[in-house]
Length: 147
Image 1 (cartoon, one colour):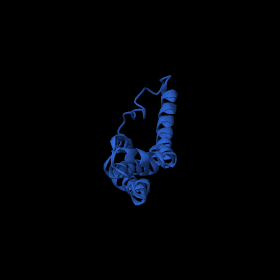
Image 2 (cartoon, rainbow, N blue to C red):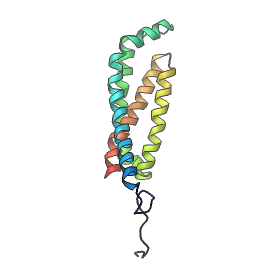
Image 3 (tube, rainbow, N blue to C red):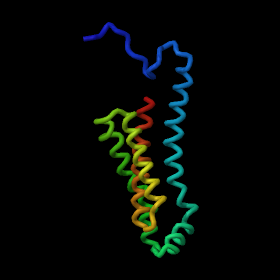
Image 4 (cartoon, helix red, strand yellow):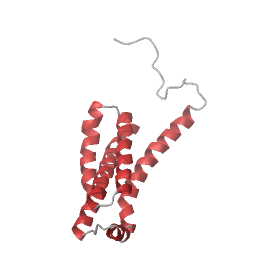
């Protein structure tokens, strides 16, 4: 049965609001730039740190073998595979797209904290997996959010 009441505006403001277009533009820029930045930064950040991170861990008494560094680097791709499967199908089925993007920020913050505070290779790898999950979710959910 159809309601005779007019639908609420999408952005929560009155339809004749002067700031509606500005608010929409800021939202689109924040979501698109935020997701693209995280994906690009996580992809390219380890290229510059290839010598620094192993030396830093060795100085802390935790030398890093080549196989361990390879797992740290590959964690992003493994997490991206998991996140892309979770984001588009599972998460959007049970939550709204906006809620999925907000939950995804928790993965970003947690991965940053893990990588920042890690002194052993497996915490770096876990952080890379989590940022990969976040990037995979963003890759699948942001286009649906804009649609």
